[in-house]
Amino acid sequence: MSANLNKRPALGKGLSALLENAATDITSKSDIDGIVGSISNIPITSIETNPFNPRSNFEKGALEELSESISAHGIIQPLTVRKMGRDKYQLISGERRYRASQLAGLTEIPAFIRIANDQAMLEMALVENIQREDLNPIEVSLSYKRLIDECNMTQEQLSQKIAKSRTSITNHLRLLKLPADIQIGLKDQKITMGHARALVSAGEEKKQLELFQRVIVESLSVREIEAILRGEIISTAPTSKPKQNHSITTTIKEKEFKANLSDSLSARVDIKKTPNGSGRISVTFNSEVDLNRIMDLLNKK
Image (cartoon, rainbow, N blue to C red; front, side):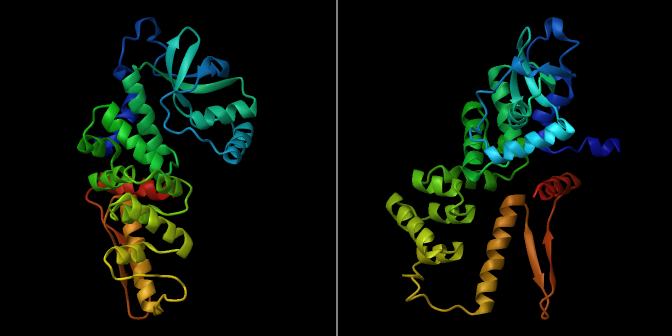
């Protein structure tokens, strides 16, 4: 058991280590040693939101559902705050729970109390959101960029901290080079991450925007965009679009599925089929730590 505890994912070296061990606080604890590291009930009016939170939009319906759950069952997972002074705290993570608790009319809220300087707080907030929030790809990309630019991380260091491959991080960062209209389209789920990655490869902004409009109007698949970029497809309008047989369409879907799942899990994915149509989907892992990371990701889906 003790051997497994030593094989924590890379995240354990960042946020989770700070949360679990009061001795890792960043500044002097002075006269609040007995408070820092514990879970305490804090007046909700004593807590201010985190200005470093990369998420600025909170869907009203989801907040109301969480508020109802909190009213019925209480807060299962405490917030994390840093102490700013006497009876004054600032959120490090848990803003959705904080807002939902306000809607539920709570006067106190359970929280871990930390001490952190601004840069450490920014890192904690960004890593926390990347790992725990359902961010859209653009929000994830912006969080990666802020960790690299503002926390002086290399892509390799970021990869180790959040347990994501460098390829996945690079693919996300490339999305920020897309025109604003395409980024908004991705954020609003008009296109997928696969579409956006293909559009990055289109090169010039004018061509990227033209292809983006075709994706919206003609419902192009990722494979069709790639074929257009290779010059294999001139038009996919309904009047001139060639018919595809079922086996080709199925193969394209399988490849897109494998690529999307592989990117999501940062792991190799294979599909094996038998002549009668049955088969299996396999995910490759490199260690017990890697397996636990993949299982955690699948459990969240």
